[in-house]
Length: 246
Image (cartoon, rainbow, N blue to C red; front, side, top):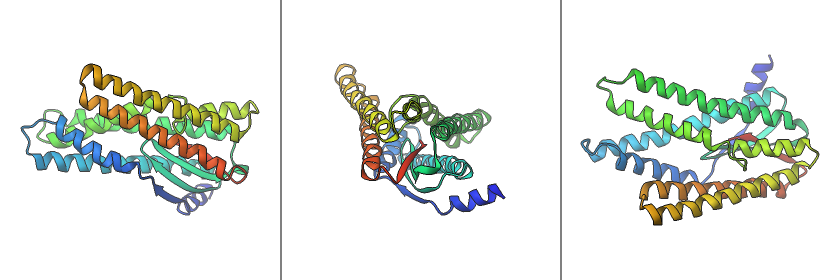
């Protein structure tokens, strides 16, 4: 009965896609087109890239569904979820959550990344030396992206899982949820800015165009998401809390 109630509660949650997804929907197809073998026609590489970007969005959405199902099952009243490239940012009733639940959800998010990346990797190896080259490459790309995402989430800045762990620890140390969110949010902004500056230096010194652009976009997206999470708690600090959905 508890699982059924959690499932019903999950479908009452409003899901919103943040505009930063536009960068990913554009960037992933470009990456596939430029990095995949030019022996394949442009239209095939373009279709593969578009499919990869939307499959990545579907994976992140499923991740948030799983995480928020666990949250609702734990008694957390989640009202809405904003989907970022790194994951989701949930708005919930502050009175129904705690640092312990936040740590649990952050851990679940990381486990999801690793498990799904492992599944894509297994499919990739199963399809090796078969005629399904395009599907094999798609699985390889998605496994790589999710593994990199899992590693990136160890960074201690919001809205990444590492940032939510930092916030939960500060919260448990009686710093206060609002102040802990501001600290973790500013940490995310600083790390995002450092990533952007480092990417520009990489571009200038090594001429690695693709890697440089990828890091620049990553830094900008992180700054944007961290600023959003910090402003959310400033707008209604007494009513809601962001849970670790990324």
